Image 1: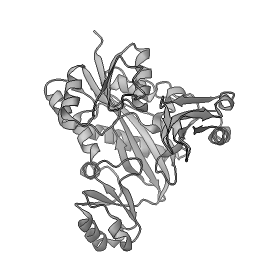
Image 2: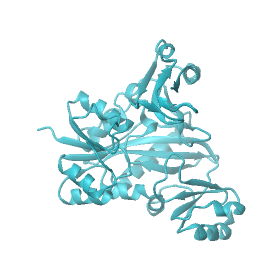
Image 3: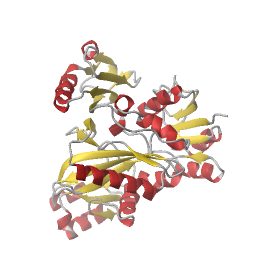
Image 4: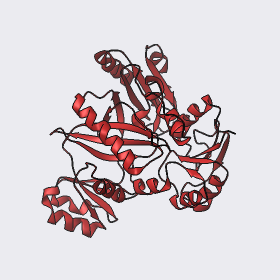
Length: 378
């Protein structure tokens, strides 16, 4: 009998998980606080409710056989209770608990001899100011909230001791800024049997103000040695967590040629969206394979690819319209994906475009044309 699957979160990642699930005729229930979430009309059953409320998550989990997430901000206490009762919860609640808190996450890397930037844990603003003054070699640094920071929120740059009062008055991490050459990512899949597969290393380019991925190139333009380092670190990290499911490992390549872990996400990730068209197995199909303990799929790429996030234009709030779509659809090797969000807002993630070509130079030119050719407006 096919198990009933549950996803905590009904946003764009859940939507793409559902698209992969439909190919296998999987029964999928979804819980999301937004009654108009992108997943609403594709899943077998949609439930509206808080992802952080114990009773809501617990009751939702009672109705499925295998429970997974598309967002880390969930009630882990409820997931642990479900796991104790024999429910299959992947990624495991213990993994989610560590990754939810950047303090626990950074300490995990240190405890497991995984390479990461130097850091000091801080309890509040006064403690952060004291640590900044006592450890000038750590500057420039970033002060990051332990919990609930994402897409650049909850991160404050501390360039000099004069900036110390910018630190958050809450538990956080004071992390030495990395003088990096490139930002890389490797997505790892691991099933219950401990089988591991990695996707090819990608190179991410972040929006200078918004601190979210603007576009990426796959494969990353790095040496074979750097690629081996990135792949090995990603595998070591997944094995250290013992995770079942996907783990997206974001990495810095510093100017000295060292590869360091920035942070991880225990779910499908923005750095793997291109795999829907560009790879033999997409990250979303691979996630189902991993949590159902199926054989993991081939992750080879068909050809070089890029991915651009489609963000709502600044100054536009209201019903979404995709300006330039007709031109985009005439371009070979260009595949737009829209997330079903009816309302656009400035810099809201509304979709992405995967671009493919056999030649990297031609790919870059095509990416430039796509970047200027489509806008999400009202």
